Length: 252
Image (tube, rainbow, N blue to C red):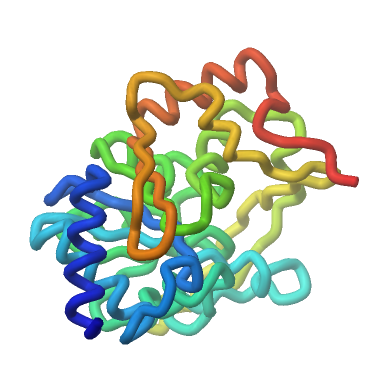
């Protein structure tokens, strides 16, 4: 099949899964899980944009915690790579993609709601605070799509954790040098996440799911999950209230 055929088929798969044209969609992904895709990550991005339509907003994580840390406390909005896969890194460098300003947990976006969702992230002193797109997604009735990666890599759960504040979450505060897209330089003091001694188990969100806000289906050759953000938050916060360690397990 051609690049366009794969693009169109992915768009059809997304609509069948329940992706809503005109909505805000945050995507976690594995390119290899999708099978052979002519055109690679660009074909995937085009398929997602086709499903969302011109009024939709596409969001992908642009996390950089692997390279921006105490030994290298510098975040260059335009140049610091993301560390979570081929599709997010391609999206980050794609013309027109906006990137939120946070040294470790930035997000990329394109579409009508991108600027509003991403534009205030620099005001937070935690990775996923109240001004972050991670926290804003439920308020715009956004959804989270997992393409071939299962439910574990759910960065939005960090935002839920920052509200619930389980005992393992926070580490030290670091001051970072920020190089903005326009060349300006500022500093940000941000409290890092910790997780020392714990392994994340965000896939357990399926154990508290009821009411149809998680949908499962096919995306090319991969299994996909689509999660409505607002009911996920409600269920996750209730689970944290019952057990602050529900979404982690002790690491060996």
